[in-house]
Image (cartoon, rainbow, N blue to C red; front, side, top):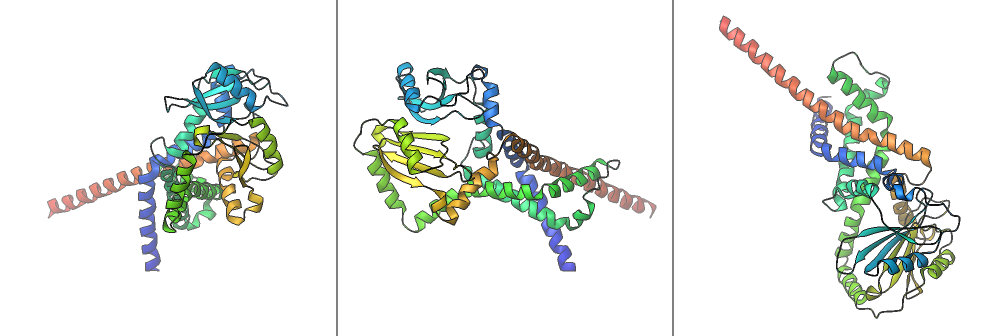
Length: 375
């Protein structure tokens, strides 16, 4: 029994300090992540000039958009495209000037592909960069925060093992510390399943690339990858490809692919075009097909790629909640705010406990000094 008590004391200390060390970053990541569920809606709200664009059943093809882009901005090189979707009816092109690394986002009309110009705001992308990269570091930092969040959830559940009996108990009229403590525990247990899923998928998305690179290095693939990249960079230039035609080919080579992103690699780097998106009726987000010099180069169909490819393909939609409609987005947003509130309430509880201990020490010293005076 004593050992169990000692274990709980150690676990409680680890839980408290892990929350204090990572609390601010977890608050930023969780808050920005819940807001980012509405990334497309935020981008539309932040760009009033795009609100009146028509939603057309058959938008202009990527070739028309790129032709308009090159006619208006001949110095820009397109690197990626986003087709119209249910929220934003415009085409978007990501491009860079030939003499700069500064990326610009250009909007184009959906009906004829005519370029409108640079977007006024990328507020939605701001929240994504804040959530995924914290603006200053690699993605593994956020992946590590996912591990910390997972530990905080599990350790908190173990510490408050009797919390199931107190789910409907919140001492509103007691002290601030007791009310905050009850809310902290109740929110944590009510959203336990969602929190575990978000923590696990966030850790997976952030740390898996690190482990994959480490594994490739251990088995000696690094040298091979460098040689392949060198060959790509020195590849012979090929004529430009019709992306409209490749889009038709993609529908045949990878049926049910709903293209959400088009990646373009210029001729001096091998002239490749890749189409990314989910599959109709499935949540997998890692389906893609790549063409080089007009020929099929690579295809990833999660339905045929084995368990781990399917598992990996589920992580992003489960984490970001982009596989359902508006109701699901609101659920992700509201429940997604709860980890941020837990970080805030946990920090407040830690501060209150520190103050309480200091008062108790002060009272104990006063009692001792009073006794000494009477002796």
